[in-house]
Image (tube, rainbow, N blue to C red; front, top):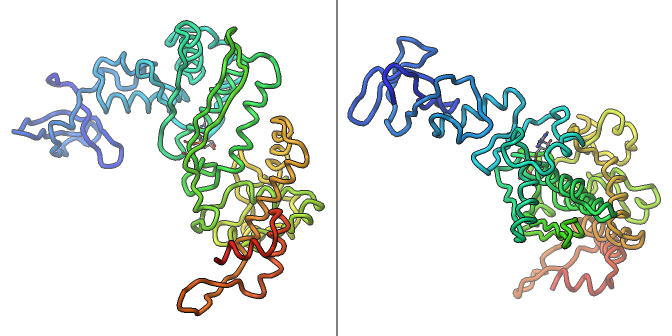
Length: 392
Ligand SMILES: Nc1ncnc2c1ncn2[C@@H]1O[C@H](COP(=O)(O)OP(=O)(O)OP(=O)(O)O)[C@@H](O)[C@H]1O
């Protein structure tokens, strides 16, 4: 660190703050913050870092900073974020900061076109540039490439993964319906594997490994999604502010009257697997009006819908049905899928009681007979077999 030059010193809430070194001790430095002249504090030597000459200047790649350390990296990312430059490189690693709003034109068709075939660093940092580099490396080296997306909940992993898929299928697709099927698999996966948590309205509760397959002409010809570690406990129990998987609410809000009757559906209040968490639907002002009162929970009626520009339970149900068709599910398969989902909801309403025998075990309460019958019918099982398997 040079004399008379500002440094980054630890700050309890901001991470780092700019200050001047006024004294050097054996293992600590006395720092005077630039914005609090006359006030000093001690900071361990290992946590004080040299600052760039101009802290308001930003660079596309953190490696271009004069001093690369934790504080200058964070400051560079922050300055960029404040100007809507949410992407920054550290060499060929991309840092993405979630803007939580749509940045105009950032992902549009023109942006997709502009990144095609461009080396990393030629254009501003972007998730499209990473996708294109992976594609070019695959083509040149003839070796499979991986893009690892990591970060805490709500960081933007799911959204950025979708941008990569859209980029690859749009730019290097075969023009056949396979491109659309790869992209359309996402709404379906999200319906069954994503849920509202306190940190993210559309939190993926499973890990996924998405493969995109290319032919010898380097065009997209297929895809495969492996999934891991779905949070199964969420099916039975959610905390107060969280919800079960989107599919349950979408079915309750969006099913046609006929389907609702077939699946014996009702408002989320009527299902134990939903009623102990947040029972409100995601809906805009308009779509909320289209959902019948009888399908809404008391909580929803009282405080209104949950709001998120990307989520709308009723509309998403219809979009999901379209996606199912596009990925090749016929009407019977679609209905079978919904029967299983509804069957799970009804399973949660069955009541058990202990037998009282010394060998333990339980029996089903008499009043659950109707629910058991409904479950068996929906799941395509024999009623007595189901009773035995649930109680033995
Ligand atoms: N690039 C972006 N532009 C605009 N909004 C975004 C962007 N990335 C994420 N978001 C918003 O942030 C929300 C959370 O992002 P996302 O679901 O991708 O997080 P995640 O890292 O996958 O979280 P989890 O680990 O909980 O699944 C999205 O639903 C969306 O509203």
